[in-house]
Amino acid sequence: MDISKEVNFIWNIADKLRGAYTSDKYKDVIIPMVILRRFECALADTKKEVLEKYNSDKNCPTKVLERLSGYQFYNTSKFDLKELRNDQNNIKANLKNYIDGFSDNIKEIFENLEFQKQIDKMSKENCLFSIIKAFSELDLDPKIVPNHTMGYIFEELIRKFSENAEAGDHYTGRDIIALMVDILLFGVDIQGDNKVISVLDQACGTGGMLSIANEKLKAQNNKAQIYLYGQEINGESYAICKADILIKGQNEKNILKTDTLKNNEFPNEKFDFIIENPPFGTSWGGEKAKDGVEDAVKLAYESKSRFLAGLPAKSDAQLLFLQSALEKVKDNGKIAIIQNGSPLFSGDTTSGESQIRRYLLENDYIDSIIALPTDLFYNT
Image 1 (cartoon, one colour):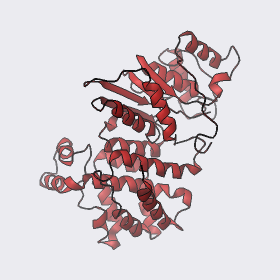
Image 2 (cartoon, helix red, strand yellow; image 1 turned 30 degrees about the horizontal axis):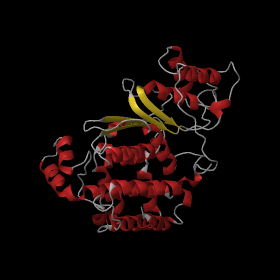
Image 3 (cartoon, rainbow, N blue to C red; image 1 turned 45 degrees about the horizontal axis):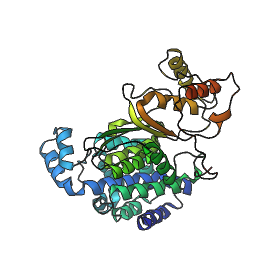
Image 4 (cartoon, rainbow, N blue to C red; image 1 turned 180 degrees about the horizontal axis):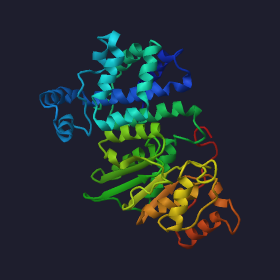
């Protein structure tokens, strides 16, 4: 799929930020502007009808406006990016009014991206008008750029912006995810007109794994009802994932901004497939752990509500993510999880890691361990 035209167009817009922003901060503007333009293009055909209804009844129920818009979101502001260009002197205030006209679920996305700060900064640095003008000329109409293509565009932009991220953070290559989904689907019958399939990613980042899993499942059974669930602690990544989920017509309420180790989300759900790439070497206890995580993990272990096999060393939470996935998968479900080498060999025979490995092997939970080539993950 050739997405070079769209990506190069967007990347050229980033040059307009030169001087006002350092290159590693371009994403703070470009990602939310791409999301804004995508939502705007999606709503364009129904915007007039939504505005007429809202202006005639300011207390119109959210569900009515969603039905009119054709999406799980809408906008009630008179502005769009092209209209903003007509009043350069008030462009900052009008852009904020435009964003404030979105439904609450979209406003939350921009809040997590801290976009209001970027609007103020662009205005101060005298580059706001040029950015608005450039993005108003970018065509991201879903009829021209379908969700599948938009996913590739998002992925490529995120890849470009991941150069300064921590090793392996945010981005897992499409070919790796495709391999994981193929492994999940091997030997599994997902055919049937009424087939319902649930997929969870407990460290979903920007949603790449969920997106590709959805694509490949649909390719094998386009009549299947697929439900995507995700958990992500990073506000920016969560916002991008939620935006992608909304455009795809999935239930955005199944994407949670949460600490998977601290909070036992979806406690009453069991999933057909779990696919994830949790962080490597993240502390769950001690001084380097986030506030409240160690107490939450220990309480869950002691109460036997989670982490039944034991607790690994406090310096690496990978085996906690694995156990959490095991607790949430259906009896006939499957898990594909990326880990580095540490969970295979760390700890002596009396350690928590060793006891967890023993538990997994004795219960026959491990189907296979597949070694991937070196230097395959971006920025590692």
